[in-house]
Length: 398
Image (cartoon, rainbow, N blue to C red; front, side):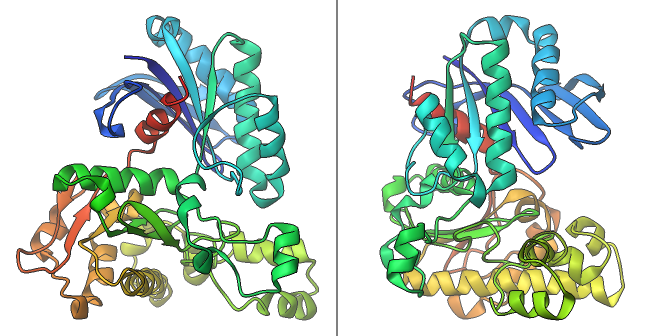
């Protein structure tokens, strides 16, 4: 099977995986992970860690002032611990957050693709630029390696116009390409395909609601294997309240803050992107694990607001779909926070949702059905393996 080196950049971290997956694999879960690693705190005191199965094969501090330096450190480390695997490398796969309306599937990277990704940097200024920095270093150090990119927006290319078009002046929106794009598509697609596999059904017959719940969170309504609605929009700021992001708010708040706080438009946007969400409400942390251990009122409120907005969105999407067979929790919070899962499910009794409380409180990680037998909708926690999905999508270009 071809070997693929996957890079998944975050805000200040870089995950990387070396996997084997056949070009004609039916789903990402058919691949095999050879090793996994991460560099965290890029731009600060960075450290790299690499594991092969359960064995930690590298762990040390590295110089990673930016993502380019981080990738250089990764390649240097892999040249020692994974030399044999790299010699047979078929492809480098890189996650790109924003593909706009142009990219609906993974593509081989070339100069034309670069220009189109650069043109979208304004909509995802940190993420798209970091993906290009990764590619620049790979091309410089290993020019013979083929590179493909997959886009977080691609899965949502099937949204109907009534879902993706905003209720603003049509000519103005079309002139500037303003529309809902949706994000976390790589994760939502993985959850769809993995659920279909677990349920023993073709994905084209599956109608479900999926949740990617992490510091950045989104929900998707999937009808017969196609995304028909999702909570993030033109940018990843729309939708749920998140770790540091406000999510959807009255847009008039921005000019109000600018006027009364003397803020520029960039500063006002920064408040909504980096100083809001669970961090802004709790005043303590964006991490649900930290907040769940605290007893103060602000931390409790932050968790309740997060759970409420997820439940509100899931309920709306069940209405959009008319009927669904399952609700899937994914992402670090969805997979591991039994408190969040309970808050979401407890408000969906009217849909016939019945959570197995005992099982819910004991399960962490893995793919597990959490609903009672009498539940009208199946409830699943699925480990969303973005690296495997990234490799699976990019392997199609070989």
